[in-house]
Every structure is written in C-alpha cells, then in structure tokens.
Length: 141
Image (cartoon, rainbow, N blue to C red; front, side, top):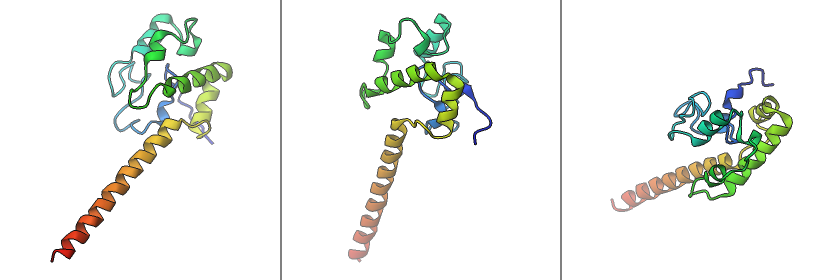
C-alpha cells in the first residue's frame, strides 16, 4: 500500500519522476526543482506556470508545437504520444489517483523498461568482454 502520495512527482509534461532511473541520486524532479531537472531548464514547466495550469493536458492549446517537439532524438517521437496519453488519462482520473497508480507500479512507463534493459545489456557485454579478456590472458601463458 502506498501511504505517502507525493503529487510533486507528477511532472507537467506527463511523466512521473518517481519512475526515473535518475530520480533522487541525480535529479529531484521537475516540480520539486522549480523546473530545473538534472538535464537543464524545463520549458514545459515554465509554460504551465505562465498559463496557470497544473499540466499540459489542462491547457486549451494542448497539444501545442512546444509539446509535440519535445522528445529525445535518440528515442524518437513515440515518447510524445505516450506523454499525451498519460496527460489525458491524468486529467480524467485526477493527479492524486494517477500518482497512486504510478507509485504502485501500475501503468508503468515503457521508457523505464527500455532503459533498464539497455543498462542490463551493457553490463552483460562488459562481463562477457571481461571473461573473454581473462581467457585470452590465460591462453597466452
């Protein structure tokens, strides 16, 4: 059971900071940091403050050009559509209910699974290379 619900982990762009691999160690989240997450100044945060809305899904211009262009080129635009869906759902059920679901691991972010897999894959390659290097050194003796 999730007792302490921290709605400040619900970012204005549709992400839940509590799922992020960098949260706490490298980043405090968008809202707690006042729109200054670990990667820099968040234009989405600034925009929602200017428009006096909790998140982009509450804005009459949603989805605007700023929102649609905000994604990592390495991941591609699918991330924008994921966030848009999260914002529509969050608007429907409310931020507290949405955060409760996210905190319980329901409705997980697919990017997190991809990131965890890529980290695991890198670690496996390192281990394999280390094993191969050790075998090569023993063979040369």
